[in-house]
Amino acid sequence: MSAKFQSKGEKDLFDQLQSADREIRKKTKILLPNIKKNINLSYENIIFIAIGFVMSCIILFSFGVEKGKRDAALTTAGNEKKIAFTEIEGAAIVEDHSTGYVVQLAAFNKRSSAEEEQGRLQKQGYRAEIRQSGSYYQLYVEGFQSMEKAQKAKNDLKEMYKDCYIKTL
Image: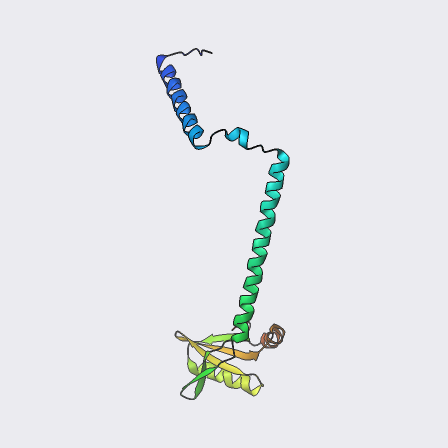
């Protein structure tokens, strides 16, 4: 079969493409002989392969989720609540917690302001603590083992501290 070319340059380009295509066929014949004869994929086989692949992905993902749950259960079971206090001019500043929830109420530039609010909250029966974070003194109400209890305390304190929020430890 011959093709009509308008110029010699077009013919040369076509010849180069054909020769490159022949070389690719030779290389694939050496590496993958008779590949079309060995692989017979119908639509049904392709669908079964795809279903098998998706199912194996789901199974492997679920194994990973279960392993993550076991690892999380082991690490939370080993944690105990530890609190270290540092005395700075009579104010207890909480440095470390490992479990539970706290409600952060406010942050103050001066420790004296944070101590005043801490005293007010302690008179109301809350377990108020101060943490130093950089140059700020953060006021917390702590001692909540469940999110519901922390949420109740947050709702009670929302009138005085409008921007309060719950943090996990």
